[in-house]
Amino acid sequence: MTALITGASRGIGRAIALEFAKSGYNVAINYANSEVSAKDTAKECGEFGVLAFAYKADVSDFDACKEMVAKVEQDLGPVEVLVNNAGINIDNLLIRMSQEQFDKVYFANLKSVYNMSRQVVPGMMKRRRGRIINISSVAGLYGNVGQTNYAATKAGIVGFTKSLAKEVGARGITVNAIAPGFIETDMTDRLSDNIKEIARSKITLGRFGKAEDIAKAAMFLASDGASYITGHTLEVSGGISL
Ligand SMILES: NC(=O)c1ccc[n+]([C@@H]2O[C@H](COP(=O)([O-])OP(=O)(O)OC[C@H]3O[C@@H](n4cnc5c(N)ncnc54)[C@H](O)[C@@H]3O)[C@@H](O)[C@H]2O)c1
Image (cartoon, rainbow, N blue to C red; front, side):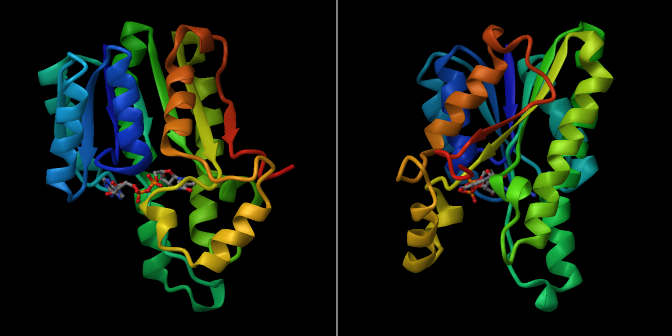
C-alpha cells in the first residue's frame, strides 16, 4: 500500500510520513525545495523496511502534480492514501494584504488540494478504494486576525472535503479533514513569545500539540477503524475551541 504525503520534508507532513511507514505503507514524500530534508525523511521512513522516496513538485502547479503522481505510481504502484498536508501562511491584516499574498496562500493551500485530488481520484474510483486526508486548521473553523487568506483556504478545505466525500462515497473512498490547533513546527516557531502565550492560554489541555498528534489522527482516518467516517473534519487542538 502506498501513501503520498505533500509537504513532507519537515513538520507535520514528515511526522505523517514516518507514522505511515511505521504502519507498513510505502511512502511518497513530496517536497517543494528542501531536497536534503526530504531525502532524510525518506531514509528514516525506509528504516521501517518499506519503500520511501522523495518527489519534488510545487503542489500549486497542476501539471507538476500530474507528473509527480505518474512517477510515484510508476515507482510504488497506485496511491491508496493521499494526505494533502502542504501549506503556507502569509499573515497580514486585510487592509494591508496584497493580491499576491492572498493568491499565493490560495494556490498553495486550496488549489493544491484540487490539483492533487484530481490526479488520484479516478484511479481510486476504478479500484473502488482509497483515502484522502486534507489538513485544514482551526483558523478555518473559527477565524484568526491577520489570516483572512489562510483561514479562507482552510475553511475551503472543509467544504471541498464534504463535497468530494459525497461524490466518491459510493465507490468505497473516504475523504476527511483534520483541523490542527497550535502545533509545534517551523510554522509556529516564528511567532513571538507573547502570541505563543496568548495561544497557550486558550488551550484546554494547557500545552501545544506535537506533529505526532496530527500524524496519529491521520493514521486513524486511513485505518480500517475509520472506514465508516467520511466528510468529517476532526479537530486535534487540545480543546482550543472549548
Ligand atoms: N503548525 C500548526 O500549528 C498548524 C496548525 C494548523 C494547520 N497546520 C497545517 O498543517 C500543514 C503542515 O504545516 P506545518 O506546521 O508542518 O508547517 P511547515 O511549514 O513546517 O511545513 C509545511 C510544508 O509544506 C511545504 N510546502 C509549502 N508549500 C508547498 C508547495 N507549494 N508545494 C509543495 N510543498 C509545499 C513546505 O515546504 C513544508 O515542508 C499545513 O497545511 C498547515 O497549514 C499547521
